[in-house]
Length: 486
Ligand SMILES: *Cc1c(COP(=O)(O)O)cnc(C)c1O
Image (cartoon, rainbow, N blue to C red; front, side):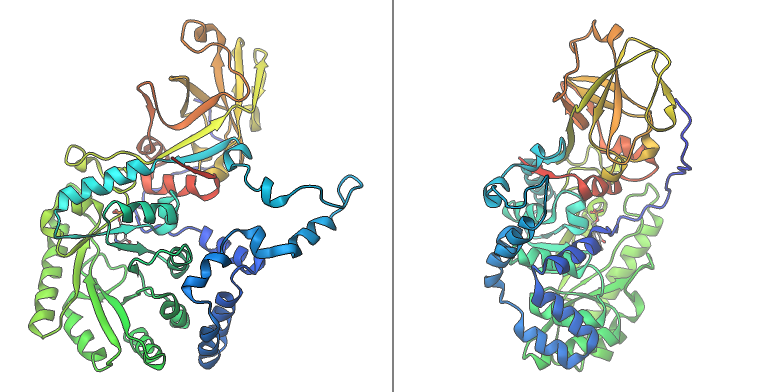
C-alpha cells in the first residue's frame, strides 16, 4: 500500500449523535431562494424580540398550504428565475429556448454518474423485524436525524411510518421543520433542547422539544399560553452519559419547580445509554437502575411521566427490559448492526448502496503515476478507470488505495489518492482475462458499497478502515450524492 500524503489519523470517539453541516447549508439555501420567506423572517424576528416573533408567527403559512410552497424550486420562483436565466449571456445567446420545467425531470443519476441507492423495502423489512422484536405494545420512534443517517429523512420517515413506526425523532429544529414541510403529520420529538429564541417555530410547526432547563420550560410554557396552546415536551434525564438532561435524582424537584405552569404538558420521559453497544454491562446496568428509580420517584410524587423511553438500537436488540413504552431506533432501521454483539439477534438488511458509472478508461503505460502525488505507479498492462465521486461525497481520502470497487461481481482495487470529486481504480488486463470481466467501458456500473454476485463491500468495513462507525459513513455518503429510491 502506498503511503498516504495527508495526516489522516482516524477517529476513536464514538458519538452516535452526529449532526451534519448540511442543516446550515440547507438553511442558507432556503433563505437565498426565498422559498420559505415567512419562516425565515419568523426566525429573524425571534432574534429581534419577542413581540416581533409573535407577529411573524401569525403570518406563517398554515401547514396545509405548504405543499404548493414547496412544490418545486422552479415553480416557487416563477418567472423571476426565467428572466434571470435569460439575462445570462451564454455563447452570445441570451434568450432561453428550453422549457426549464420539462428538462428539470432529467433524473439526478443522469446528471451525475455517482449516486446513493436507498432500498425502501430494506427499511420496511428492518422496521418490521424491530416490531417483531419489541412486540405490539411498544411504540417505535424512527430516528431520522442527520437526513435519516444520510438516507434521506423525508423518504425514510414516510417508509418507517407505513411500516408501523409511531413517532419520529430528529436532532434539530430544522430537521423537524423539513418533515412538516413534507406534510408529515406524525408526532415529532427533537432529541435536544432548542434555543429559547426558536420557541415560536416549535409551536407553529407543532414539534416537541426535549426539555431539561427550567428557563426553557417556562419560556416555552409562557409562549404557548400566549397563543392559547399547550406546551408538549419530553423530559430528558441524565442517568450517566452526561450529555444532556436533568440529573436522575433531581427529576422530581425539576418537575415540581416548573410544574406550576398550566400550559406545560409532559408527553414523555427518557434517557440515553452511553454503553448499550459495549460488551461490559456494568455502566449500562447502572444507567438503567437510575432511570427506573427516577421514573418510580416521579410516579410516587404524583407526576405522570408520559411515554417512558430509553433504548437506542443496541439496547432495543440486546435488552428487552429497556423497551418500556417506546424504543428509539436509528441505525438498525437503516439495516446496520450497532455493534457486533447484535449480529445473530435480529435480521437486518442494509438500505444504502453507493453506485457510480465509469467516466473514463485509460491505458496507463508502465511506471506512469496516477492521481495527485502520483503515489500509485502503473505496473503496465492495466486500465485505469475513473468514477465521479470523491472525498467530498463521503469516500474518505484516508481510504486511498485500501478499498475495492465491484464491477460485474469482481472486486477491483481503488488506486491513487482519492480526489475531492473523482477517484480511480485499476483493472489489471493480465489477470482480468481469466475472469468474467473483460474490457472496462465508459458507462459501466460500479458498486462502491454494496453486494454483487456474493462479493460485498460493507459500510462496517469502511468504518473499520476509517476508525469510525457505520453511522458516520452513511451520513457522509448522504450529504452530496443524489439519492435514488427503489
Ligand atoms: C441518535 C439517537 C438515537 C438512535 O441511536 P441508534 O444507535 O442509531 O439507534 C436514540 N436516542 C437518542 C437520544 C439519540 O441521540
